[in-house]
Image (cartoon, rainbow, N blue to C red; front, top):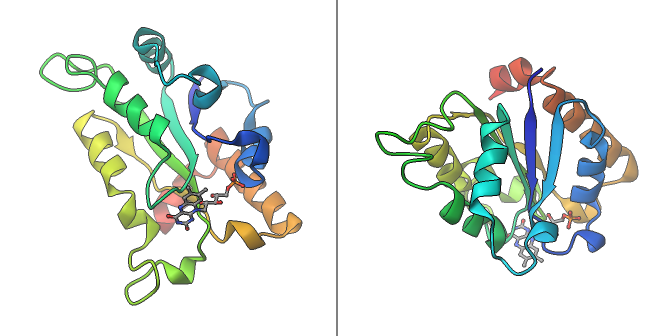
Length: 183
Ligand SMILES: Cc1cc2nc3c(=O)[nH]c(=O)nc-3n(C[C@H](O)[C@H](O)[C@H](O)COP(=O)(O)O)c2cc1C
């Protein structure tokens, strides 16, 4: 069975509406491991060996987070810095991640129309996520189109339920081809 590791990085999950709904929507899926980084490492001291073992034992990696200052919350950046070591994730002997997929799931406060040239936020979120694309490339992972929820403050309950359904389908892999084709 394909195994999917969802690395959730939300600094204030109890106050989250969107990420908590998304993660609850996939938690029960077979083959899915949800790993809440802020719960695991409130002191930011990451257990690198444990994280590398989790990566080794999964085929697909999803990084899920609220978009903060056009990027990921700080513990996810530290996770990348600490866990993707030379000799593990890159370098001539660093092949542990080769052949896995990487998907970013980001919830974004601003509406999609604001994320374009001439708009308030100037660039599409997909462009602002390019460091993840480059990281996937360097580590031999296949970068998938990001899963984005825009305009988080005004998402209706109905629309949120629809996003949860789409996310569930993505994580089960059913929509992977469609999303790739639409990208
Ligand atoms: C510190 C901080 C920084 C944020 N930076 C951005 C940003 O750069 N762009 C944006 O569109 N929204 C930004 N937001 C809004 C969050 O993306 C939004 O509140 C979150 O995705 C909602 O998801 P949640 O309900 O799971 O918390 C920011 C929010 C906080 C608290």
